[in-house]
Length: 118
Image 1: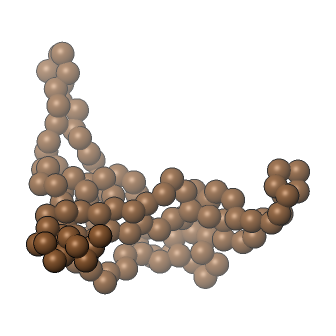
Image 2: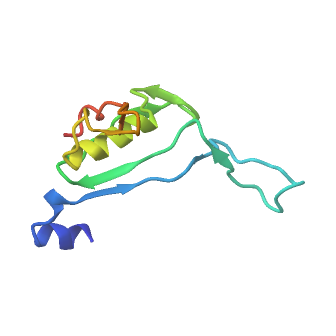
């Protein structure tokens, strides 16, 4: 898909984001009461997200995990920053807001685009 988008000239205008709901436990877990075989359960403390196109510079790694892959060790990011990165790539300004019936502003996002990607 990336090759096709690149060859057609659409990759710069298309942001691809691959993420999951959770990462996986840094070690094999043994929970015989719940699972027949050992495995890696959900792990919310750390996960990987992959982005391509849409003005994102390729070949970058932002952040790092600790030596066992359990917790962020360098440049941790928050979901709000991922959302801000996506909205920024779409051209939606940080000041974008919708207004409720009492004319109160509700901003679309509060994070900062992830530095080093654009």
